Amino acid sequence: MSSSAASPSRGWGTRLGFYLAAIGSAFGLGNLWRFPYVVAENGGGAFVLLYVGLVFLLGLPLLVAELLLGKTSRSGLWLALESLASDKDSGGNLRPRLSWVTHFAPVVLLICVLVLAYYAVISGWVLHFFMQFLVPLFSAQSLEPQRSLDILLNNGWLQAALASVHLLVVGIIVANDVEEGIERWLGYMMPLFVLLLLILAVKSLSLESAPEALRFLFYPDFSQLTFSSLGHAVGHLFFTLSVGFGTMVTFGSYLQERSYIPMAGFRVATLDSMISLFAGILIFPLVLITISAVTGPLLLFQTVPSFFSQIPGGHLFGLGFFLCLYLAALGASIGLLETIVANLRDKLKWSRLQSAVVAASTCWILALLPALSSTVFKGVRLGERGLLEILDGLLIHWMLPITALVVSQLIYYRLERQKMSSEFIDPESLSSVKLYSHWMFVLRYVAPTVIIAALLLQVWGLFF
Ligand code: PFF
Image 1: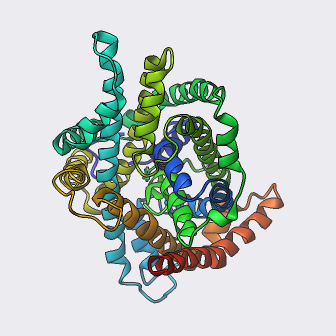
Image 2: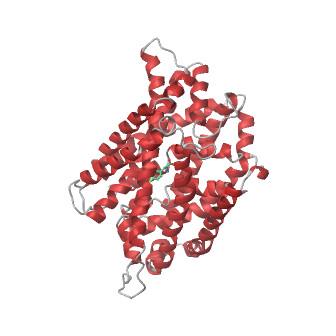
Image 3: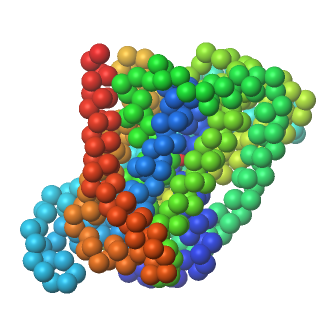
C-alpha cells in the first residue's frame, strides 16, 4: 500500500495481520493497568463475574457488529455511518435521512483523540518506570519505588515530555501505513507479551498472598457491588475491547473477503478477557503483599515496583514487566491513532502522513491536561477525583457506552439485513442461523436495555 494514496487501498496481507492488530489494539493498559484497579474499586469477585458475563453477552455482539459494518462498507466509521444515515439504502430504496449522524461521527473521533491523549500520559508513566528499572542496571544507583513515583507526580512537565515521546513513536509508526507499520510492529510484540506475562504470573502465583488474591478475584460477594458497578463494567469492557471508538470498524474494513467475522470477534474477545483475568492473577498477589489499601490509577505503579524492588532478581522482572506493559500500550495507541487517521483519509482525503501529523499533534496538545493534573491543575477536583480521573470516568463510564449504543442501533436499524445475514450465516452450519437470530436479539433488545440501565444506575449513584 502506498502511504501517499489519496483513497486508501484496503486489506490485511495475512489473516494473522488482522488478529495481531485487533488483539494488539484490544490488549493494552486497559487489561494490565485499568482492569485491576476497577476490580479493586468495585469489590473483587462479583464485579469480575459481572464483567466476564457482559463481555460475552454485550461486548462480543457489539464488537462483531462494528467489524461487520467495517467489512461491508469497506470504510472507516465516518463514511460507514454516513452511508447508514443516507436517504437511500444500497439497493436504491428510499428511507428517512438521519442528518444528525453527520455530527455524531466527528464526536466519536474526538473521543478517540481524547482517549489517546490521556492514554499517552499513562504510557509515559510506564516509560518512566521502565527507565527507573533500566538505569540501576548500568549504574550504582538503586531503585526507590516511592521516590520514582513522587518524581513523576510532582513534575507535570516530565509527564508531558514522556507523553510526547510516546505520541511521537506512535505517530511515526502509523504514518508508515498499515502493512508496514502495524503488522510488523505487532508481529514483533505479541510473542514477547505472552512470554513475559507467563513468567511473571508464575512468579506471582508462588507468593504466599496468592490464595487470598485468588479468593478476592474469583469469590463473588455481591454485597460489594454499587450502583455504579454496572456502568463501570460496561464502560471498561467497551474500552478494553475497543468498542464504541470506531476502531473495530476500521479493522473490519481491512478484513479479507473470506474472513468469518463472528469467529474473529469471538477470538479477540476471549483472548482479551483471558489476558485481563491473567493480569488480575498476576497483580493482586503483588498488591496484597505490598500495600493492600490502595486503589485508583496509581494502584499498579504503587505496588508492582515496590514488590520488584524487594525480591531477588526483581530488577530484571521489573524491567520485563514494564517493557511488556509499554509494548501493550504502544499496540493499543497504534490502534487508536490508526482509527483517527483512517477516518481522516477516508472523509477528508488527506494523505496518511498529513492525517497522522494533525491527529498526533492534537492529541499532544490535549495530553497537557491529564499530564499536568497532579501539578498545575491540582485544584481541579470532583470529590476524591483529580482531572485525570475525571477525564477517565467521563470518557469511559459515560461517553463510550453512549457511542457504542448509538453505533449498534444504527447498524441494527439501517444496515441491510441481507448484508448482515450473508456475513453471519455460514451455509454449511445450521448453528450459525441460530447465532444470527441471537445476535440480532442482543442488538435490538439486550444492548439498549443493559446500557441504558447502566447509565441510569450511575446517575442514581451520583445522588445516593
Ligand atoms: N483496548 C485498549 C486497552 O484495553 O488498553 C484501549 C484502546 C485501544 C481503546 C485502541 C480503543 C482503541 F481504539
